Image: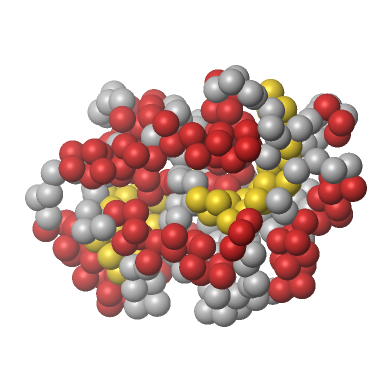
Amino acid sequence: MHFPRVLITTYHHAFLVKGGGEYEIFSIADTLKQQGFIVDIYGPYSRSLDDYDVVLHFSVHGGGLELLEKIKEANIPIVLWPNLWVRDGDIAAPDLINSYLSLADAIIFKSLAEKNNFSKSFKLPIEKCRDITLSVDDSYLIQAPPDLFKTLYGLEKYAIWFGVIEKNKNQLQAVKVLREKGIKIVLVGTARSKSYLQNCLDAGGDDILVIPNLPYKSEIVRSALQGALFYIEVGYEPAGISAIEAGLSGCKLVLSDSEWSREHFGDNAFYADPHSEESLSEAVDRVLMSNVQQKTIDESLKRFCLPHAIEPLVDILQSLTR
Protein backbone atom coordinates (compact mmCIF):
# COMPACT_ATOMS: atom_id res chain seq x y z
CA MET A 1 0.00 0.00 0.00
CA HIS A 2 1.19 3.51 -0.87
CA PHE A 3 1.67 5.82 2.14
CA PRO A 4 2.34 9.42 1.08
CA ARG A 5 4.26 11.78 3.35
CA VAL A 6 1.76 14.29 4.74
CA LEU A 7 2.25 17.81 6.09
CA ILE A 8 -0.68 19.21 8.07
CA THR A 9 -0.94 22.99 8.07
CA THR A 10 -3.32 25.60 9.48
CA TYR A 11 -3.39 29.33 10.17
CA HIS A 12 -0.47 30.59 12.24
CA HIS A 13 -2.26 31.47 15.50
CA ALA A 14 -4.57 28.45 15.65
CA PHE A 15 -2.93 26.90 18.70
CA LEU A 16 -2.99 29.99 20.92
CA VAL A 17 -6.40 28.85 22.17
CA LYS A 18 -6.90 25.13 21.62
CA GLY A 19 -10.43 23.96 20.88
CA GLY A 20 -12.05 20.99 19.20
CA GLY A 21 -10.53 21.80 15.81
CA GLU A 22 -6.98 21.88 17.12
CA TYR A 23 -7.40 18.61 19.00
CA GLU A 24 -8.91 17.15 15.84
CA ILE A 25 -5.67 17.99 14.00
CA PHE A 26 -3.66 16.09 16.63
CA SER A 27 -6.02 13.12 16.45
CA ILE A 28 -5.93 12.94 12.64
CA ALA A 29 -2.13 13.15 12.62
CA ASP A 30 -1.79 10.36 15.18
CA THR A 31 -4.28 8.12 13.38
CA LEU A 32 -2.62 8.56 9.98
CA LYS A 33 0.71 7.65 11.60
CA GLN A 34 -0.86 4.48 12.98
CA GLN A 35 -1.99 3.63 9.45
CA GLY A 36 1.61 3.83 8.19
CA PHE A 37 1.85 7.45 7.00
CA ILE A 38 4.69 9.83 7.76
CA VAL A 39 2.87 12.89 9.14
CA ASP A 40 4.07 16.20 10.55
CA ILE A 41 2.19 19.26 11.75
CA TYR A 42 3.80 22.37 10.30
CA GLY A 43 6.16 24.17 12.64
CA PRO A 44 9.83 24.66 13.49
CA TYR A 45 10.43 20.92 13.70
CA SER A 46 8.70 19.85 10.48
CA ARG A 47 10.83 18.83 7.51
CA SER A 48 11.61 20.74 4.36
CA LEU A 49 8.68 21.16 2.01
CA ASP A 50 10.16 18.91 -0.66
CA ASP A 51 10.10 16.02 1.85
CA TYR A 52 6.28 15.83 1.61
CA ASP A 53 3.97 14.38 -1.02
CA VAL A 54 0.74 16.13 -0.04
CA VAL A 55 -0.44 18.90 2.26
CA LEU A 56 -3.61 18.74 4.35
CA HIS A 57 -4.64 22.29 5.29
CA PHE A 58 -7.11 22.78 8.13
CA SER A 59 -9.36 25.88 8.13
CA VAL A 60 -9.86 28.84 5.77
CA HIS A 61 -9.06 31.36 8.49
CA GLY A 62 -6.89 34.32 7.56
CA GLY A 63 -3.21 33.68 8.14
CA GLY A 64 -2.76 30.50 6.12
CA LEU A 65 -3.19 31.63 2.53
CA GLU A 66 0.38 32.81 1.94
CA LEU A 67 1.67 29.46 3.16
CA LEU A 68 -0.57 27.58 0.72
CA GLU A 69 0.55 29.82 -2.14
CA LYS A 70 4.15 28.77 -1.48
CA ILE A 71 3.08 25.13 -1.34
CA LYS A 72 1.24 25.50 -4.65
CA GLU A 73 4.35 26.99 -6.24
CA ALA A 74 6.19 23.82 -5.19
CA ASN A 75 3.60 21.71 -7.09
CA ILE A 76 2.56 19.77 -3.99
CA PRO A 77 -1.12 18.67 -3.95
CA ILE A 78 -3.28 20.48 -1.41
CA VAL A 79 -6.24 18.94 0.40
CA LEU A 80 -8.31 21.71 1.95
CA TRP A 81 -10.38 21.01 5.05
CA PRO A 82 -12.43 24.25 5.44
CA ASN A 83 -13.98 23.44 8.83
CA LEU A 84 -16.18 26.51 8.47
CA TRP A 85 -19.79 27.02 9.43
CA VAL A 86 -21.29 30.23 8.01
CA ARG A 87 -23.95 31.61 10.34
CA ASP A 88 -26.83 33.79 9.18
CA GLY A 89 -25.14 34.61 5.88
CA ASP A 90 -22.25 36.30 7.69
CA ILE A 91 -19.28 35.97 5.34
CA ALA A 92 -16.30 37.77 6.78
CA ALA A 93 -13.87 37.41 3.86
CA PRO A 94 -15.38 35.82 0.73
CA ASP A 95 -12.44 36.71 -1.53
CA LEU A 96 -9.99 35.14 0.90
CA ILE A 97 -11.97 31.91 1.09
CA ASN A 98 -12.46 31.74 -2.67
CA SER A 99 -8.67 32.03 -2.99
CA TYR A 100 -8.31 28.99 -0.74
CA LEU A 101 -10.76 27.07 -2.92
CA SER A 102 -8.85 27.89 -6.10
CA LEU A 103 -5.55 26.65 -4.63
CA ALA A 104 -6.97 23.33 -3.41
CA ASP A 105 -6.77 20.10 -5.38
CA ALA A 106 -9.45 18.54 -3.18
CA ILE A 107 -11.90 20.03 -0.68
CA ILE A 108 -13.20 17.79 2.06
CA PHE A 109 -16.37 17.99 4.14
CA LYS A 110 -17.28 15.92 7.20
CA SER A 111 -21.03 16.05 6.66
CA LEU A 112 -23.69 16.86 4.11
CA ALA A 113 -24.92 19.65 6.38
CA GLU A 114 -21.49 21.28 6.38
CA LYS A 115 -21.20 21.05 2.60
CA ASN A 116 -24.69 22.47 2.09
CA ASN A 117 -23.98 25.34 4.46
CA PHE A 118 -20.67 26.14 2.77
CA SER A 119 -22.00 25.95 -0.79
CA LYS A 120 -24.70 28.54 -0.05
CA SER A 121 -22.04 31.18 0.49
CA PHE A 122 -19.17 30.28 -1.84
CA LYS A 123 -18.58 29.13 -5.40
CA LEU A 124 -17.75 25.58 -4.48
CA PRO A 125 -16.09 23.62 -7.33
CA ILE A 126 -18.05 20.39 -7.11
CA GLU A 127 -15.40 18.41 -9.03
CA LYS A 128 -12.97 19.06 -6.16
CA CYS A 129 -15.35 18.03 -3.36
CA ARG A 130 -14.71 14.86 -1.37
CA ASP A 131 -16.73 13.40 1.50
CA ILE A 132 -15.22 12.08 4.71
CA THR A 133 -16.66 11.57 8.17
CA LEU A 134 -15.99 12.74 11.69
CA SER A 135 -13.27 10.63 13.31
CA VAL A 136 -13.41 9.96 17.05
CA ASP A 137 -11.15 7.84 19.22
CA ASP A 138 -12.82 4.58 20.22
CA SER A 139 -11.51 4.89 23.79
CA TYR A 140 -14.77 6.71 24.64
CA LEU A 141 -16.51 3.33 24.52
CA ILE A 142 -14.42 2.13 27.48
CA GLN A 143 -15.92 2.38 30.95
CA ALA A 144 -14.01 4.70 33.31
CA PRO A 145 -13.96 4.54 37.14
CA PRO A 146 -17.51 5.81 37.80
CA ASP A 147 -16.78 8.25 40.63
CA LEU A 148 -13.32 9.44 39.58
CA PHE A 149 -14.39 12.83 38.25
CA LYS A 150 -17.09 13.43 40.86
CA THR A 151 -14.71 12.68 43.73
CA LEU A 152 -11.90 14.79 42.31
CA TYR A 153 -14.10 17.88 41.91
CA GLY A 154 -16.57 17.32 44.73
CA LEU A 155 -19.60 16.98 42.43
CA GLU A 156 -22.85 15.06 42.56
CA LYS A 157 -25.33 15.98 39.82
CA TYR A 158 -24.14 18.11 36.93
CA ALA A 159 -24.38 18.77 33.20
CA ILE A 160 -21.18 19.12 31.18
CA TRP A 161 -20.01 21.00 28.08
CA PHE A 162 -16.60 20.65 26.38
CA GLY A 163 -15.28 23.41 24.12
CA VAL A 164 -13.84 26.89 23.80
CA ILE A 165 -15.83 29.38 25.88
CA GLU A 166 -16.98 32.22 23.63
CA LYS A 167 -20.08 34.15 22.64
CA ASN A 168 -20.62 32.14 19.46
CA LYS A 169 -20.81 28.94 21.50
CA ASN A 170 -23.62 30.37 23.64
CA GLN A 171 -22.56 28.97 27.00
CA LEU A 172 -24.04 31.95 28.84
CA GLN A 173 -27.59 31.01 27.90
CA ALA A 174 -27.07 27.46 29.11
CA VAL A 175 -25.59 28.71 32.38
CA LYS A 176 -28.66 30.88 33.04
CA VAL A 177 -31.19 28.17 32.19
CA LEU A 178 -29.49 25.47 34.24
CA ARG A 179 -29.04 27.73 37.27
CA GLU A 180 -32.79 28.44 37.26
CA LYS A 181 -33.32 24.67 37.48
CA GLY A 182 -30.70 24.18 40.19
CA ILE A 183 -28.40 22.16 37.94
CA LYS A 184 -24.66 22.70 38.14
CA ILE A 185 -22.92 23.13 34.79
CA VAL A 186 -19.30 22.14 34.21
CA LEU A 187 -17.59 23.98 31.35
CA VAL A 188 -14.36 22.35 30.20
CA GLY A 189 -12.38 24.67 27.97
CA THR A 190 -10.39 27.87 27.69
CA ALA A 191 -11.96 31.25 26.99
CA ARG A 192 -11.30 33.46 23.98
CA SER A 193 -12.79 36.43 25.85
CA LYS A 194 -12.19 37.07 29.55
CA SER A 195 -15.25 39.32 29.69
CA TYR A 196 -17.53 36.60 28.28
CA LEU A 197 -16.09 34.08 30.73
CA GLN A 198 -16.74 36.51 33.59
CA ASN A 199 -20.33 36.94 32.40
CA CYS A 200 -20.76 33.17 32.60
CA LEU A 201 -19.23 33.03 36.08
CA ASP A 202 -21.42 35.88 37.32
CA ALA A 203 -24.56 34.26 35.88
CA GLY A 204 -23.71 30.82 37.25
CA GLY A 205 -22.79 31.73 40.80
CA ASP A 206 -22.31 28.55 42.81
CA ASP A 207 -23.82 26.46 39.99
CA ILE A 208 -20.92 26.74 37.56
CA LEU A 209 -17.51 25.10 37.50
CA VAL A 210 -14.96 26.04 34.83
CA ILE A 211 -12.06 23.68 34.16
CA PRO A 212 -9.61 25.12 31.61
CA ASN A 213 -8.53 21.73 30.32
CA LEU A 214 -8.54 18.01 30.96
CA PRO A 215 -6.17 15.44 29.39
CA TYR A 216 -7.57 14.47 25.99
CA LYS A 217 -8.91 10.89 25.75
CA SER A 218 -8.10 10.29 29.43
CA GLU A 219 -9.94 8.31 32.09
CA ILE A 220 -10.87 11.55 33.84
CA VAL A 221 -12.58 12.85 30.68
CA ARG A 222 -14.50 9.60 30.19
CA SER A 223 -15.47 9.59 33.86
CA ALA A 224 -16.69 13.19 33.57
CA LEU A 225 -18.89 12.32 30.59
CA GLN A 226 -20.15 9.02 31.95
CA GLY A 227 -21.10 10.57 35.29
CA ALA A 228 -22.99 13.58 33.91
CA LEU A 229 -26.75 13.99 33.96
CA PHE A 230 -26.41 14.98 30.32
CA TYR A 231 -24.06 16.62 27.84
CA ILE A 232 -25.12 20.05 26.60
CA GLU A 233 -23.88 22.05 23.61
CA VAL A 234 -26.27 24.63 22.24
CA GLY A 235 -24.10 26.99 20.23
CA TYR A 236 -24.90 28.82 17.01
CA GLU A 237 -22.78 26.38 15.00
CA PRO A 238 -22.54 22.55 14.96
CA ALA A 239 -21.33 20.83 18.10
CA GLY A 240 -18.76 18.55 16.46
CA ILE A 241 -16.55 15.88 17.95
CA SER A 242 -17.28 16.59 21.63
CA ALA A 243 -20.94 15.66 21.19
CA ILE A 244 -19.98 12.42 19.41
CA GLU A 245 -17.56 11.58 22.22
CA ALA A 246 -20.26 12.28 24.79
CA GLY A 247 -22.73 10.05 22.98
CA LEU A 248 -20.20 7.23 22.75
CA SER A 249 -19.62 7.61 26.50
CA GLY A 250 -23.31 7.05 27.18
CA CYS A 251 -24.36 10.66 27.83
CA LYS A 252 -27.81 11.90 27.05
CA LEU A 253 -27.46 14.88 24.72
CA VAL A 254 -28.99 18.35 24.61
CA LEU A 255 -27.96 19.99 21.33
CA SER A 256 -28.83 22.87 19.05
CA ASP A 257 -31.53 21.87 16.59
CA SER A 258 -29.85 21.99 13.19
CA GLU A 259 -29.38 20.06 9.98
CA TRP A 260 -25.99 18.94 11.30
CA SER A 261 -27.37 17.64 14.60
CA ARG A 262 -30.21 15.76 12.91
CA GLU A 263 -27.81 14.22 10.37
CA HIS A 264 -25.56 12.82 13.08
CA PHE A 265 -27.97 11.97 15.91
CA GLY A 266 -31.42 11.64 14.38
CA ASP A 267 -33.98 11.17 17.15
CA ASN A 268 -31.31 10.19 19.69
CA ALA A 269 -30.84 13.66 21.18
CA PHE A 270 -32.91 16.41 22.78
CA TYR A 271 -32.95 19.54 20.63
CA ALA A 272 -33.28 23.23 21.44
CA ASP A 273 -33.37 26.45 19.48
CA PRO A 274 -30.14 28.21 20.57
CA HIS A 275 -31.84 31.59 20.17
CA SER A 276 -34.54 30.77 22.73
CA GLU A 277 -34.11 30.30 26.48
CA GLU A 278 -37.64 28.89 26.60
CA SER A 279 -36.80 26.24 24.02
CA LEU A 280 -33.63 25.30 25.89
CA SER A 281 -35.51 25.12 29.17
CA GLU A 282 -38.04 22.74 27.63
CA ALA A 283 -35.28 20.55 26.17
CA VAL A 284 -33.61 20.29 29.58
CA ASP A 285 -36.95 19.30 31.15
CA ARG A 286 -37.37 16.58 28.53
CA VAL A 287 -33.92 15.12 29.02
CA LEU A 288 -34.36 15.05 32.81
CA MET A 289 -37.66 13.20 32.49
CA SER A 290 -36.28 10.74 29.95
CA ASN A 291 -35.49 7.16 30.83
CA VAL A 292 -33.93 6.46 27.43
CA GLN A 293 -31.03 4.04 27.52
CA GLN A 294 -28.11 5.40 25.55
CA LYS A 295 -26.80 2.05 24.25
CA THR A 296 -28.71 2.59 21.01
CA ILE A 297 -26.85 5.88 20.57
CA ASP A 298 -23.53 4.17 21.26
CA GLU A 299 -24.19 1.72 18.43
CA SER A 300 -25.28 4.35 15.92
CA LEU A 301 -22.22 6.48 16.63
CA LYS A 302 -19.68 3.71 16.21
CA ARG A 303 -19.46 4.59 12.52
CA PHE A 304 -17.42 7.62 13.62
CA CYS A 305 -14.86 5.57 15.56
CA LEU A 306 -11.24 5.36 14.55
CA PRO A 307 -9.49 3.73 12.81
CA HIS A 308 -12.31 2.73 10.41
CA ALA A 309 -13.62 6.31 10.12
CA ILE A 310 -10.29 7.55 8.73
CA GLU A 311 -10.47 5.37 5.59
CA PRO A 312 -12.11 7.98 3.28
CA LEU A 313 -9.38 10.50 4.14
CA VAL A 314 -6.69 7.86 3.54
CA ASP A 315 -8.14 7.18 0.09
CA ILE A 316 -8.14 10.90 -0.79
CA LEU A 317 -4.52 11.41 0.27
CA GLN A 318 -3.41 8.36 -1.66
CA SER A 319 -5.35 9.25 -4.81
CA LEU A 320 -3.56 12.62 -5.13
CA THR A 321 -0.07 11.15 -4.88
CA ARG A 322 -0.16 8.04 -7.04
